Length: 550
Ligand SMILES: Cc1cc2nc3c(=O)[nH]c(=O)nc-3n(C[C@H](O)[C@H](O)[C@H](O)COP(=O)(O)OP(=O)(O)OC[C@H]3O[C@@H](n4cnc5c(N)ncnc54)[C@H](O)[C@@H]3O)c2cc1C
Image (tube, rainbow, N blue to C red; front, side):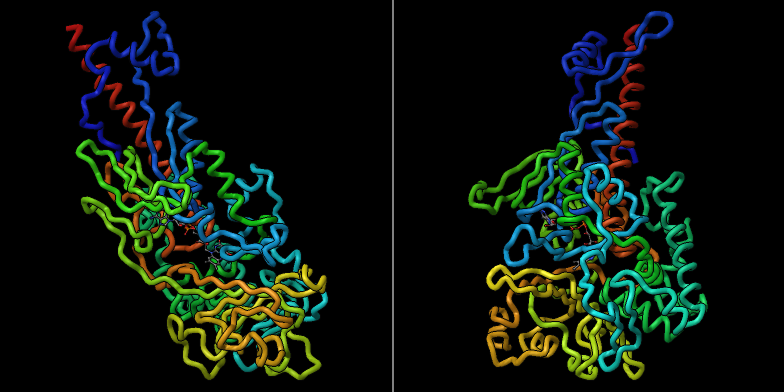
């Protein structure tokens, strides 16, 4: 819907001379001369003030594409990004192993794939190096990837890695089912990619575009049912596909919807940005020329009688004013899940996204000189444990929801990421990442790594470092929604004057790229509305001039 002309008195609509004065003072684009020598009336688009709340993939992409699209039209937005944390990237961020800035490791979103066209093209534009996601995986472990059901390894492969299933092995064990899965994934992702193109892009209704593309047929089913309908059954679905839905979304096939299930199998060309994926979003915000307010929490968005929005925000860093600041904007993009943003919307907008449950994911990063212990995985003492252990449910286990879905294995994944040198001992060690629904205790670590838990890393003091666990970093994320089957999704427009929302896409597909797609979509819709507004103003002005002449 086109943004309505502000009800504030408009300058320049009554007299031609006033109009031209206004235009030249603002440095307007020069008017095209008509054949008869006259010049048409054109309104200089006044500077648009845009606030973006959230400096993650969604907010950064909204800023970046807003600038791009607006540049094509001559409209000049001034963009301000509010970010309550002290960094840009949101759920895409790194921490430094041993506090060493040359050893960053992803704490949140770690990979993207070749069909993620926004991320890939932005990374290229900013000159970032994209590495194969398995580039640094240690070579000295014979088995690279295994799927463990809490008792036995149901699948292992010596080649490939976290993101690369070894097709030959899969075919050998599961017959043609992997090929059917791959083809189904390709056609599903191919359909999804149409959302980037006309006539589907831009879309005001995510539910509508998903329906038009037939994707609601897939989101309405559980992964289990969708796979069954396509003749993809256990053990391949439960061994391999469910291991993927668990490591990616902490959910089992009878609960996660079919589309997100297919996304989990779309790992072709898995990559990450050297030094951290957050650099893509940092680059986008820089390219947008946005003003960034870090450590600044937006507390309220209040709509004024003029159709503008006043944001109340508060800084939390010592250098920032602790008092509440108020700033007025024409357009506001909320690029964070509303339910976690602690923002009051006044008055209540036309549409308020419903609360949905999010996964509470424990991420544990640690270094140790020890390899994963065979005993922890019921293997003989001389056996090698795969460097990446994904998990699934045992055939005797009933799939459950939420935290209980983890089952007997107790964790979703343990990945040996790479070798690191411990600066204290100069010793060569391993860097591990564990995803789990509950805190990993010192006793768990002792079991996984095969050391005695009588040292510092016991339950009483499981953050202490010693010779067995030499560095540890824990974080609990609200990582992604529980992706239950559904056919409606929160639309991007919350209020028709210009309050937009990007996070509704998370219950459709939750990933950096889809947040970016929604940021891009919102940017396109906002600029299209501005263009309509300019045209409407021009028409109004032409009418006024004609009247004046009469
Ligand atoms: C452990 C983990 C692993 C993941 N792995 C992958 C992966 O491999 N690949 C992938 O594509 N995706 C992955 N994801 C998902 C991906 O991280 C998210 O889908 C994506 O980053 C979401 O981006 P966003 O911009 O929509 O939200 P966010 O990144 O959450 O950004 C929202 C921002 O808004 C800020 N904010 C919130 N409220 C306010 C307020 N009131 N005022 C100011 N600022 C506010 C927040 O601080 C935050 O920075 C993973 C997520 C996690 C947690």
